[in-house]
Length: 347
Image (cartoon, rainbow, N blue to C red; front, side, top):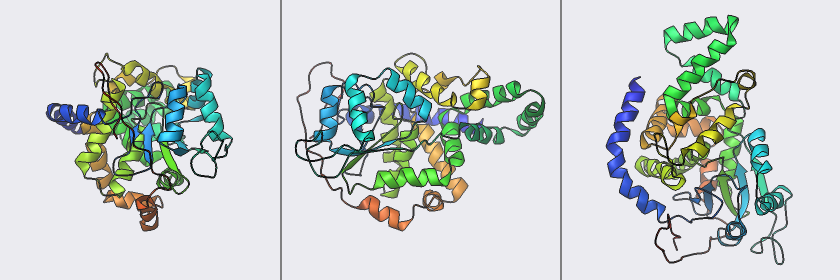
């Protein structure tokens, strides 16, 4: 497709330029032991992003609570993803999440000693309507394929879904992200954006399974709202590939990402019925062109990114809450870089 060709060309042209930038940015990220892809969201003090927390160690939990001072978690995953992750969680990971789930008190002699109030976790599944996502992908098929899919929908749902799964594999991240933006209900987007913006009760952490797709799109919208330049938004998104060790092609650390993404589609009633699914290996990594094309699509579809934000209920009042200073400043932290470390902590 034209978009696919453009994405490939942009990815090839940007990759040499982005490489050193991404390595430099990675060096400013906290390297946690069991929580992957953790870092602040650029230009938004008090807002962090990461992969899932179920594998957290004691050191990770102490850092998140006492240094990053996270008091609110926004979990973008579906119920079944969370259940599978918790089935293999570390004891510390389970205890940490239980504290947020139960609204544990914050204060002296509590699990989180700085500030007041309670810990909070909100589940806001951006891919909660997976069948809606697949229908959105089907609606974007080329005319001949769309007619073929419409025929199969009445006589052979398995073949219909095969067409959709193949299209999603071929459309890669840009098709996944734009279909998610279009298919998730406005109220879901409003909830995710509003909770992330509100740091009055303490710092906020947004995450999904790998912290790059759903989290990446949400972070991009938040960065745009505070005026970050498109190239900075793209750079922040592309950093996930470095921190996760995922390459756009095969190999590397992409297997875990593919498994995490595949588990999302298992939420679909159609995916449960038919074993064939998306080739998730095609969606490894976080190529710069994927976010470039996604932002371009939003501008084209809604007239402007701000128009999309307003459509889902996040207008000027929401933007002002996003720009407000957080209640708790994150503590500065630093440590010496040692040979072989993937990243270091910024002060």
